[in-house]
Image 1 (cartoon, rainbow, N blue to C red):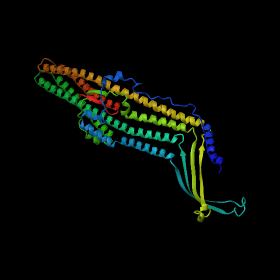
Image 2 (image 1 turned 60 degrees about the horizontal axis):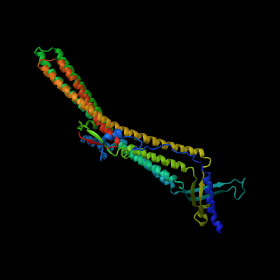
Image 3 (image 1 turned 90 degrees about the vertical axis):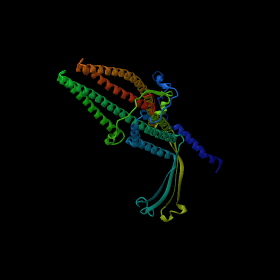
Image 4 (image 1 turned 30 degrees about the vertical axis):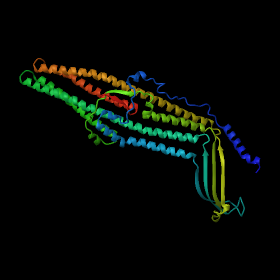
Length: 480
């Protein structure tokens, strides 16, 4: 072979590659428009969150619910996180993402298959005369086929990165599911604590009116009062009993709800006893907020991974505009007589590269790229929306905690005043200086205010759950 001949294939290959590149479709300048928000630069939080920041504070551990100091709550959440069906679904999605990653990873590997084939043909004598025509000829073939697509433009690499990002997102979704389960159980548990306290208020109301009934009955026997005072006390006792029944119903419903959140039947809920929760105190957040929020809140982390996956999808779509370079081949044995199949003359070989061009595909490829650009913009928009929503949830929880402190303080003062007024009215009634109506009028606002106080304290505990959820699983609590 001459020198000029030896270089000809390379020249032909280079020429073919140049023609291929010149024939490629154009992206037409298509590109995504979405811009990821910088939590510190784009979203102002200092005015809303600055007063709650504690310098040097760190995000607490994932078992944030232990701040309530209730061992039963710890057990319920721990049990739920070990066997909740929604966690099984989240873990199955991780397995699915890993399996898809495995498939994509194999795309740039050598592909091959072994084939055994027997085929025959008989040509009619009317077309081809004897000895070829009119005789059935059989051929036995055994071959191994192989091929490989070279990732010249990074398409397979981008696909693998995209699938890996999807795996990461699915893994973080498991953490988001765990946080959601813990938060929902904690919210129901706070409601259960509120229902028990509401039952206490009803019991106190009944006890006061039973004492009043006893006093009224004694005064009626002495001729100091009429039966109306007795009937009024009996009515108040019945009303308090109705409140107690309603509280019992709420307790049962919440126990069943907690059992369902744990993935179990209602009988598991029946085993739940009265909560022993601490009252949430002043809430604080770490000084690294909001930037560190991005790494602690699972749904934000998962959304960020999906943005990365969408970006890799754009790379895949762009790579489709360029030629595909393959190397394929086949090695085997073929013979008309099976006895000759393994002779040297039966060897069959074929190998060679190929280049495929995306001809007449401009609109299709640009359409696919536009789809991937839009998917990226959507992922960015969802991430930015989650980020803004997360900061709003943090601010709302902190604001609620502050305003609830003021409301509870004010209402507690009113309750104390109402109790003193009730004591004075009862003392006057015992001394014959006042009427039972005076006592009932003094008791009526006390019942309403006690009910409100129970509700406000429950809301305050809910803010602790809400803030933990907003921060992704950890918050600091001062005092109790």
